[in-house]
Image (cartoon, rainbow, N blue to C red):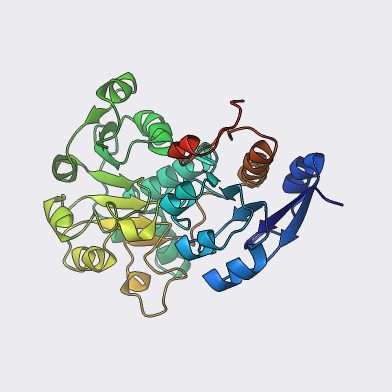
Amino acid sequence: MSQYKVVVTDYEYDSFKQEEEVLNKIGVELTFAQCKTEDEVIEACRDADGLINQYAPIGRKVIENLEKCKVISRYGIGFNTIDIDAATEKGIIVGNVTDYCLDEVSDHAMALLLSSIRKITHLNNTVKNGKWDFKVAVPIFRIRGRVLGLVGFGNIPQTLAKKAQAFGIDVIAYDPFVPESVAKERNVELVSLDELCERSDYVSIHLPLNKQTEKIISYDQFNKMKKEAFIINTARGPVIDEEALIQALQEEKIAGAGLDVLEIEPIEPNNPLLTMDNVILNPHAAFYSVEAEEELKRKTAENVADVLSGYYPTYLVNKDVKEKVSLKEK
């Protein structure tokens, strides 16, 4: 008989080889659900020792109905699907994977940026539609010496900064939680959000989604940006006020956008962004590579295995839970 029950609340994967390799070693019965609502999570997970979560909602109602749960581990960097305060109050450890897909997302942001600046997607589409004329993309400005503003300066934007600097781009960043010394080591200047919007030729979003960051880029910010500016988002769609973005594009307040994420996903068929030649749209794909997915699945499972084996996980979200739960440090 299995020692522990761990439920995958929902998933988009075809294989669970990495999870099973990690969890089989400690006698876990891994079960799978496709929960869409909190009630479905409660029904599937009430007696579980641990949860692995992708998108299913794990709010206070769910957490209060978990009878044995010691750990919730999320597939990803963000954890906005989980009520962290409620989990901490109940002594449930929450884990994520903060260092996965750093190269994938920073590469994708750089690709969207370069394609926007050089108007590669627009040129490709016009050629395929029978028009051979570079003038459809006029004006295109030289990249070297331009300014990239990073909204958020965690692991991914720090990785992106290095790649942008290799193209001769100067990098500034807004992040009130990052010490000046960290930015200075990376040859990046920390500035206010207003100054970033005013100075940047390109703006790239790298914030988690929470109450403080939702729609942090809105009308005021677009009004401060240069008409030649491009905005890139590989973080979370609702960090940008999409209505304000559409208006800024329609009124030519900015030059264009490269978006891997949107307020509503999948994109609605009547969204005006679909008709704009100066907007590149991707289906929330920046995180993906074969290697990144394998790493994510293994590390997500390792969070669960650590806790059930009596250790704090490597990737601990709610550090305050240590006041309620006494485990060993790895």
